[in-house]
Image (cartoon, rainbow, N blue to C red; front, top):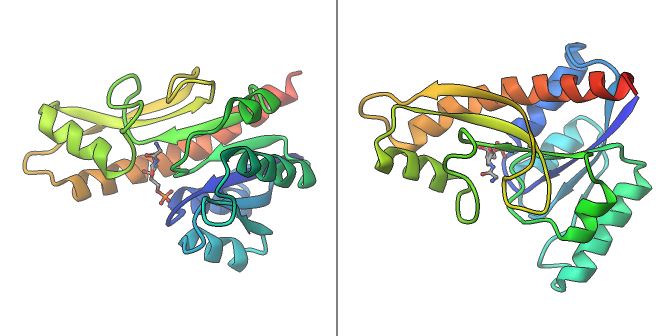
Amino acid sequence: MLRISVLVSGGGTNLQAIIDGIESGSIQGAELVRVISSNPEAYSLERARKHQIPSVVIGKMNYPDRRERTKAILSALEEAQTDLVILAGYMSILEPDLIEAYRGRIINIHPSLIPQFCGTGFYGKHVHEAVLSAGVLESGATVHYVDEGVDTGPIIIQEKVSVLEGDSPEALAARVLETEHKILQEAVKIVIASKRQR
Ligand code: GAR
């Protein structure tokens, strides 16, 4: 069983997609062992509770020092014997120590077609606002491995979403989010299959 910990900051619909994938049997060979939230108010914590997944809040409010925060995240991941870390709407940048400790074992979901509309400052609704201001006809979603850069690691899966006439950032975000849920489930299956081959 691949032991998955998920890092979140908000509503957690992507976390829910992984929960649903595992509970429905669509994702096999994996279990959710920890949810780590940077935000004590995140609805993700409620989702974890409903599905009996142990959760912990590690954020700026309880760990104001960056180094201490990273140490706390590392010990939570280690305590849960984590094999794979998923950043699912996690709005912080991971420190190099954490990336080094879990190299090749951290994946992130991003709401655009990387390398477009990604990097510093491109997160959440800012991504969709930028897509609409640029007037492009296509956006999408990407799941990729995490390295030291911001949204730069190797891409696992990507899918396009059309930008429609008169789209608002919210309407575009909602359509992209549906695609995110689908490709995040696929990405987890791809990672599980790749670990089996070793
Ligand atoms: C998702 O759209 C995710 O791709 C984005 O935040 C949203 C979280 O939604 N992540 C980023 O922008 C990270 N750069 P969720 O909490 O419902 O999964």
